[in-house]
Length: 406
Image (tube, rainbow, N blue to C red; front, side, top):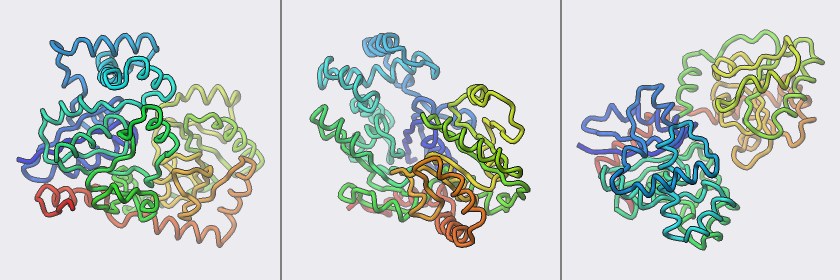
């Protein structure tokens, strides 16, 4: 019996691990253990996927100091405990305990004040977990903190590791250097698994190849559902009027952008607007901000794919859900950003100022060359097979020792 240990945070990272898990459970003689961090447990609960939490590894008899440290810190700093008080206190307690031990209490708290949870890297705690689980393979996404700690510790222990990039491998060098310089410790530098799964050829431009043994272009497993829908013909829903879908995010400029889009649809008799809010946002906030009932504006808090499919154009700041819209063959308008190269990959147009939006909408709808270029870009980006199945084959080969780390 071989064991796989998977670690992930919530949101898109948990969606990746969820899809990988669904594929891996078909492999004979495999045991899978998932460490679900923070909000990820809700995704696994919804799918009836078993998991463990930090609290499952807590030694109450010998680690009361860690619990108290986390509790006092969370109460003092008004930390949200919606995932559960015990889990929240331990999440902070283990990390802070190691930071204080390594750098001193003053430095640790200065670091948190300046850089937030990005300084968390609980190596000793992750070593305790991995020594207890003793897996043959550790799988993570590309999140820092506990996921990075799992990779570092596993490599030191000689355990094979695989990490999955959610986007295009862009490293925020400014933040990385800031943490390294603050603690004068290179342990915070970026790290990959021995085997690395990336979303597309474009990602290779951003990788630190000196830190990678083997790279596989697999796509993003969290996009598999969109690909399945596209291949089934479900993406060909007829759209009568011109419908614009704004994939909102909790960003300062979101309401300025919505205000501009409302002005545009009010000037166009056959335009409608769907505001698809982020799962962490509240619908009431948007309804209140709109201030009046506008028949041509709908605020939605669920059914991402349904709202994408009923739209002609997807507008976003830099939401990763826009990439799922590309898989579903929808053109995109996004803000120019460093994380997702929409324009470079011909997935959409990029704006710098919101007053450019109306002109871009017109081009996407009426410019034959723009429509053709964007259609070809989406076709190139769309995966040819399901990422979860591709990663399953890679994992099978790793487990069976058919791949060698050089």
